[in-house]
Image (cartoon, rainbow, N blue to C red; front, top):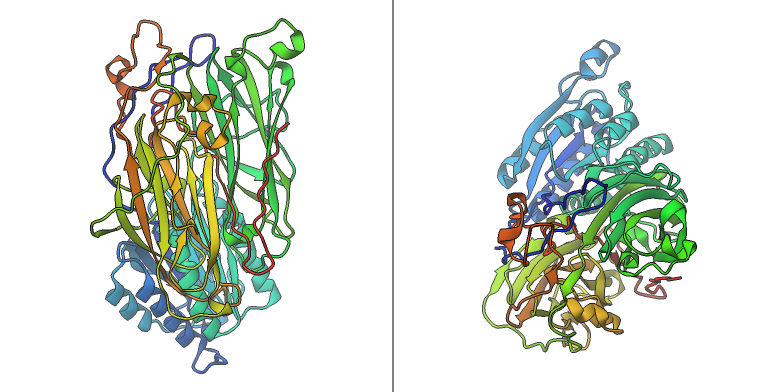
Length: 620
């Protein structure tokens, strides 16, 4: 992921102020699927009979063909196997434990070639899972989100290397390689090992008791892996207390968070500036939604660790639906004048502040640790805030014209750009969570709706929860809508109108109405769409066609005048350093010179029958 230009540091350690410029609208970008390697167990045990007929290998081949048939045409999918080159005697073991082959590289999917290659696999040898994971990782790109989907019917028979240790190696660079494992008719020991591999990398473990189950599970897991939420950022290590907290400048960072252990970070905030800080945890998908409630808490402290009485908490029910939970703070203490009291002064005016993120509520059977994505933005103060607040949401008129095919991204980091007003079509799998983005200039507003088109089947076994959520450039949730969907055409919001926000103005933040005040930044606005697994058959592969009706209104206007760095005047791009001219970076915000905007993401869907959405924000 590319990031907006970071603001400089003054010699005293306080972040320097730069004037801002609004970037031009960027053209849509090609969706970045996570390149994915399928790793198939072809050891001798795969010759065992499957309860549904044929061998386990026959069932695995059928499952792979099902995935290939439904995979997006632009996805990058490779194939590797282990156990095909030797026998399974003791004499064969030294060679068998090195017997890993990459049969198809992780390039744009060639469906006929992939299917033909799978059909030729003949199982015979050992189970070197650790070596197979290393080989698959080596066949993937060296940067960006990447996935491995491993299908195995038993334990590694070749350790060392231990598969869990290899999984930790894969996550050492910030968990950018996510491993999803499928246990094909496995015992408890094998299940534990495969679960460890998945949990260590932030992936999922799924049981497939027989070939029929594998035919359902493999396409769903593999397709979801292509659009998984992949955390990204510069590695950083928070501390248990504020005293040794690392000082972070505006940007995006990646840490690891454990149960009920706060992680502290320091941010220097200049006089008059506003700081945005957030932490996001993406929970792995799972089959069991019972006792899967999680919560994150964020606190702000001033000088010498003084509690600033600023606390935010976000809770998620059914985290196993693949929830990405974010807690965030919009800290305005530096915009307030010091009043002379020692206690209050530590939480007012410019200076160093401390932000802590804690995984405070932990679900049963939650992984011991998960990647923590952090975002920091410092917005300079203004000399002129521009036009008054706009209190009314824009009106919506359904756009006309042909449907433009798009494919949403698996996270904020790879959200697909929509080129203004129009109708955009995508196809989602049950259990997917996809992201799009629309750029708004000062003076422009947004309205949209999501139409879920008809799919075969009706009844309880086809019921899902569908959700859409809109986020600001610093990824603060603006609005969310959810409803039940059983395959009949449906629209969100359910009133058939639209999710709409006012025209974007800096002074919107002065409004007492939250739906107005949070739309006060020009830049990328994010649209997320979620389709949950079906209630009675969560492993079912049932594609859902969706269409987004998007309307961008208003004429771009002059924005606020930000305080300039010494020697600079005005707020135009020509006054910024050359490195700040990255306005057209696909992942930049309108806040040039202030780094990446903060994530403020808390999209959670509830069950359909008797299970409701629970989302709470707590302020002190």
